[in-house]
Image 1 (cartoon, rainbow, N blue to C red):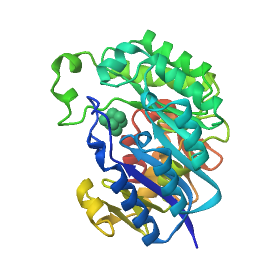
Image 2: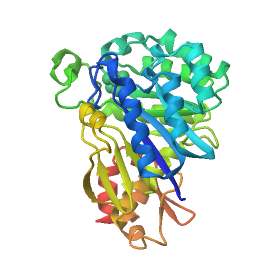
Image 3: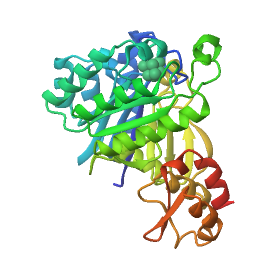
Length: 353
Ligand code: SF4
């Protein structure tokens, strides 16, 4: 049986954050029925998995028993990476100990910031003290692969508050950081809040904040391996690498996506339909894995880069970008520099037409 990745979308949140447009519901009474539906689907597809990723939503709203039941239903390789996203306010020491016993071996905390004003602005339910405590507790109960999400260019963020968040990161037992720039998504409360929108750092400051984060995280031992992802040696997220390398993964749950046998598919954003269907409905999106898509994703991987033997025209097209410091040529590949990451879409268009 071939092993692929498994993404499980857990569509529950205690409350919606102001900036978020991910699919989730705040009615937590359906988690048992949801768990049963996930198990039905995993068994029906019949794949083996070498990475599992519980994303959401807030996966840590499932009980350790529910997480354990899902993992027991899947054929999982012995050395699989099993990640779970957690909100710092929804985990206790006991909870973390039990999900570890259930099989989870990597945690990804949705911290976003270690500044309480920024956390309030984002509508997060935790404060910075809870975030630090959750990460330290995870380490204490035995997790040695812990990631935190940070957000850049948040309303009201200053270079000083960003530096404080980054120096807190450097002191914590973290192995991986995802640092994303705030995106204002249509239809979210943030998009309608003119006060908060006015406080978002301008384009130049946003770019400088990104470069500052790349530098400070590098100094703290987190090497950049993807435009928004940084890891200590050997702690790159194996599951997410599958997305960027165009490898196969099954998506289970409302709003989940998958890529199998050369086709990308999506599951409708409808929890009730997911629960009541014997097998989840899927919509085929398009064919995946074209040379253009592979090139686009390979360029995101700043450590691996775009292999020039597979894309021989890219070097000529990228000459001027190399001269201007947006790209570098190393070991037969073209790689984005941190400055290049800021304009990655334009670079990708130029390189692959
Ligand atoms: S950011 Fe995370 S916790 Fe907040 S609403 Fe979105 S999925 Fe839920």
